[in-house]
Length: 325
Ligand code: ADE
Ligand code: ZN
Image 1 (cartoon, protein in one colour):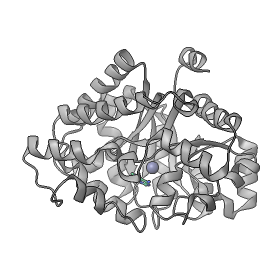
Image 2 (image 1 turned 30 degrees about the vertical axis):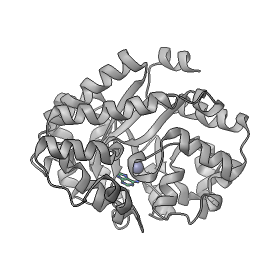
Image 3 (image 1 turned 90 degrees about the vertical axis):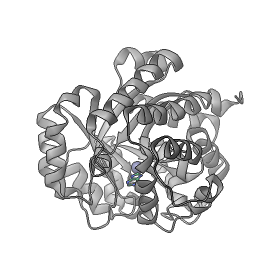
């Protein structure tokens, strides 16, 4: 483990898709275990294929990659593989989006997903001193009725979820489509977050706030196009979970130096740094912080402030928060 400032900085990760932590090495091992065939000749060929033009071109490979996840043990191995890497980078808390619909549609039961992930979360706490939270994510490019069905069918697992979320293809799938589902989640006592303003327009961020009553916006970087919206986000202290390397790899921005992060910070927004899908986007939490430090010349003070924002905004009990402050 490198013992530098960024590694030692206690980092909480609020925006991570657990299926997006599947490294090609484990993908090939699980493909063999489960007799699943992959469209790549070898591990190197898989990595070479991770050359994306936009969100959809990534999602196509992301959904294909997870075909190797079949049994509870696979989900446990997936999460533990990531938790170990994250621990080595100084990550102390992880909130993971889980995409059950992407598994149910392949005939994998929710119990397989949840038994595996909850076992890994227990081990993360006891073996790695990492606390975790889970976010039940709805695929926004699927019908709202399917999301509602999942919300009801996942009742036995609700205690394991801190929040519901909204992910997958953003364009043409506005937050308002899921207004009833999020209202029901609220009734059930679940917090709410949503991807908005990654590829979608600033109006999707407003919709997520007004119609879904979210407490955090995942990405939200297109808020820079709307000064009034930035003022509102700053006034309300709404947290943005920004994913710098993801935004570069999915061509939300051309180069990290062009990213709106400094503008968002200058406008007074509460931003956090996250990895999104580290196996696909070329780096974990430490790499995301390091890339920003290089691109924007941030001081250690700024890096500490960003890491602190995530600890304050995390779904964790106050005792844990106090211990991590
Ligand atoms: N699912 C996994 N990663 C995603 C992203 N960056 N945006 C939307 N949906 C996702
Ligand atoms: Zn995401």
